[in-house]
Image (cartoon, rainbow, N blue to C red; front, side, top):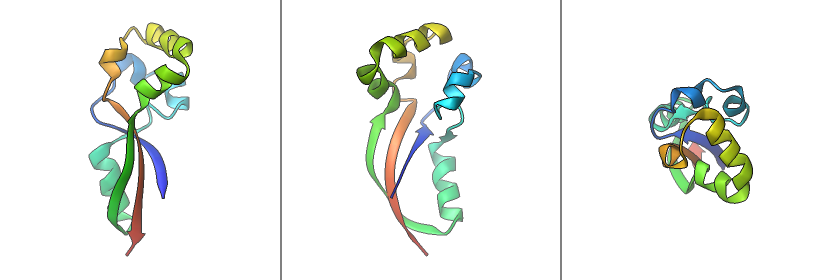
Length: 95
């Protein structure tokens, strides 16, 4: 079982280039299709996504002040990031 971060669409440029987003595993995340293609190339089969959460929404709930500070730093709204960065928990079988 693995938990990781994937992108549903490209990040706004300010987020993609920010070191804090990189350290937070956001700007270094791969697009979902690329990510799971690599999983299959590694020999894993029967991939099953068990849980998905909107990462930006989760962070905003847990640490709203810090999340708001980052949004202001990047010059983007929370709505602009909704559905972009996803936390996925998945499992697979090694073929």
